[in-house]
Amino acid sequence: MNEIYLDHATTTAPLPEVLEAMRPYLSSQFGHASALHARGAQARLALDEARALVAALLRAEPDEVVFTGSATEANNLAIKGVAWSAGRRGGHLIAAATEHISILHPLRTLEKQGFEVTLLPVDRHGFVDPDDLRGAIRRDTALVSVSHASAEIGTAQPLADLCRVARGAGALFHTDATLTAGALALPHGDDQPDLVTLTPHLFYGPQGIGALRVRRGVRLAPLIEGGPQEDGRRAGTEALAAAVGFGAAARLAAATMGARGERAAARAGTLQHALLKALDGVIATGHPTRRVPGLLTLCVQGIEAESLLTALGAEGIAAASGSACTTAVRKPSHVLQAIGVDPVLARGAVTFAFGETNVDDDAAAVARILPPVVGRLRLLSPLA
Ligand code: PLP
Image 1: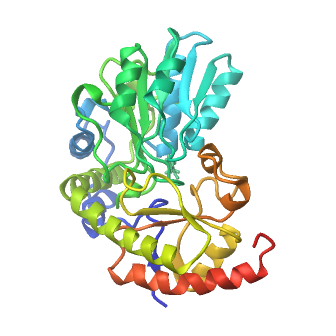
Image 2: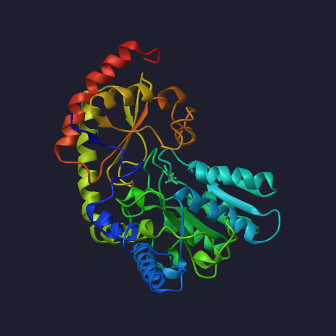
Image 3: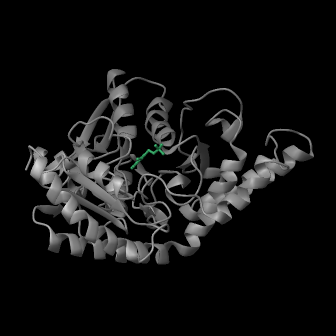
């Protein structure tokens, strides 16, 4: 059975060009970027090139890119790093109620340490209102963090407007662009966020690495202390091969972003249209157009998402429910709750994330397979 992979918002397959770029650094060109011999110089050069490619994708400067082990670590570094850099307890932080748990959990930790946290509400599409942000900012607000998009609803936030409000009030602005890096452009010039999180495993690069863009002049306390790597902002030997793969994936994404997005969005649109026609009780969540291209987020009435994903898996279709990090938690989704979805309906939340692994026929195949599967599950489900 051929797999139809529709889980590109969880992780993606590294492209052949990415693997090709990485391979030498896992074998003959191994090296430590701090070493003083020729092999070290070669590793340093490769790391510098990778950093410049990631910076170019973000329209940032190379020395503003801090490599981390994951997007989760980059989010922790942004939140705790800014809060702790003031070198005192207390202060105020703001985030959207729909943030990923790698933002919300560090905020909870900071609250226990004496910081105050405000979570902003969102509207039914998941948008943060810049006026709500304006009203929440205080003189002691150190940081505002609003992700570019959530995997659970796909709505792309008005980052430029939010950034302008935060910076106008003297606060730093962070965005978690894990889901959108390489898929949607970030704001230009003065409206650029001060801090940006990304990881290449969501745009056809390797797992095990992430990055935080830290605008020049922003002070950040390191989470991981030790050697002088990453300009003292993240100690530990850099993952050379992964960084090179990150750079290659960033270069390819910058060159093909528009075309990738169009292909994915067209296929997701075909599936959405077919499913809404074939099935009653299916609700599309998030904004219909201002969203991550190719990410279809639905709530299917009368079923449990886990049962549907298992049944689809048996048919060779790999899809997801919400954020990969929260599927194991089995709590009602805080994101769907925030946009006002009924908790019972939210139990049927599924996401189909199209990407470069797909072909045109995939949407039609899923549209054919899914309705009878849902019909069967509804006959058995206590939710129906
Ligand atoms: N931020 C967002 C919006 C995500 O969807 C995810 C993963 O699902 C993360 C951060 C964490 O990414 P990672 O697990 O690669 O660190």
